[in-house]
Length: 115
Length: 112
Image (cartoon, rainbow over all chains, first blue to last red; front, side, top):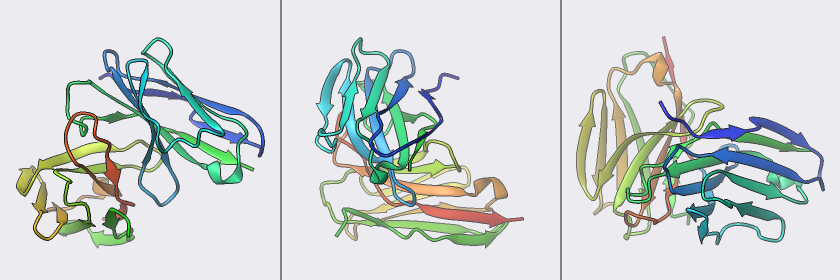
C-alpha cells in the first residue's frame, strides 16, 4: 500500500538553529499539505501545494518558515531560526487533485523539539 | 470562539461499551464532516466522512451530522482495545481545495 514518507521522524534542535523536514507524497498525488500539530491540538494547515505552486500559505509564518516543492513531487519545509514555540509534530499529507479535501493521506510526521 | 470545538477528554471505557464522540462548530458554511483516528506517534487516518446532514454507518462506526444544531457525532459500538486512539473531527466548507479545520481531538482508551 502506498504511503506518504517523511523524514526525519524525530528532530531535536537548539533555539535559533535551522531545521528542515522532508516529505515524499504518494505517487501521482498532485496536492501536498504541510500541517503543524501542537500537543493536545488538532492539525493546522501551514501550506498547500498544487503541483509546484503554492495554493494557500496564509497560516505560514513567513518570517521564519519556508516551503518548496520544486519539481511538484517531494517537498521540504524549513524553519530558520527555530523558536521554542515551534516544538510540535509536523505532518505532511497528499491527495489526488480531483478528489474532495477529505481524501488526504497523512504521513507519520516529524516530531520537533526545540530546546 | 474556535470554529470547531471538541472535548479533549480523556475518555476511558470498558471493552464492549458504546462510545460517543462529539464536535460542535460555528461556521454554517461547513458541508463536509470527517472523523480521523490518530494512534500515538502516527499521522491521522480517515475513518469516515459525511456530506451535509444525516447518518452514515461503517461496521461498528456510525457518523451523524445535525446541521441545524451544528453538531456532529461518532459512535463506536462494541468498542475494542484496538480502538484506543485520539479521534479528530474535521470539517470543510466545500470539496476541492477548501482546507480542513480540525477539532482538538478526543483521547479514547478502551480497557480490556
